[in-house]
Image (tube, rainbow, N blue to C red; front, side, top):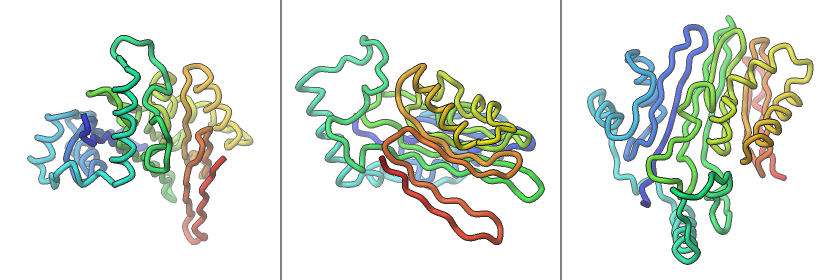
Length: 247
């Protein structure tokens, strides 16, 4: 329907505190709203109009949704819409297809828009946060993995913290973040292990994905089987590392 909508989540590892929002339209900073849900403490996930009412009540800025459009993203959306109108796409009746939301012609504006962060403090406490605009031309009301605890966002001090990106249905069907962290605990080569977990998940259900994580022992890892994924990481007192990993 042409309305940019967002999902976001924040999780704290030492007490399993969790806050998330989904399908919110017009919230200036969805990740801040997710943190407010966490700090409020009564619920874990608020969606749609209810999340917007909560945002107003706690004083989060509300903006015209059009501010989230860029020229490239608007052009890509129009091209995808024209493609669907010309060729047909009744996604309510067709079997699930992990590529169904891919634009007709991919561009940097349409190949992904998820941002994640993970942290481990000196005393071993962990946290994870993820925010996304979801898939291009997704079905109205669709929610991805970002706001689902254990799928796209998870933190537990004895395991670590993870934030995932990619096709949400893949991550939800495999409970990816929790399952991967459990498998990686104590793994000698955690980076290779994370890539293996991604390949296993996408092999089971289709789609593509990537993830960043910091493990309970402080190791920082990232992997993906998407076309590209940008990362940055730093330890206290150390240099800032960055990498943009294209195929």
